[in-house]
Image 1: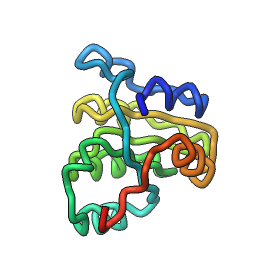
Image 2: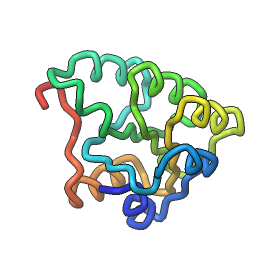
Image 3: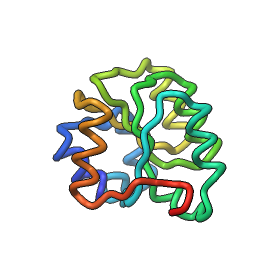
Image 4: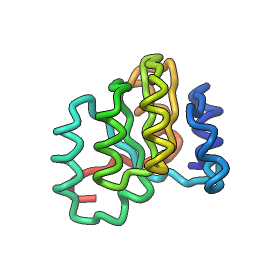
Length: 130
């Protein structure tokens, strides 16, 4: 699913419009997603993947609107972070996402609802065994 479609169905916004200049972010394809608010869980999940190539097509759904979520995404090469529950990132978080080349989105939907909506539209869960 393209970022532009995700924005439309989740009534989301892209916080770092500056990244649109670097590559065609709105047409970036997200085929996998997972949810975590503890960044240690994110690292644990992604370190246990049998097929790490899927990470380049994946999105982290979180309510953690801090630089820690962006740093974690950067460490594991996640291209997209979606902030749920109406969380608004500070400018430092947006700047860090820009510097890392990470697409930073936000929506008022809960993590649960985001996951369900994306799953219904064909985005698969990112799990240890694929």
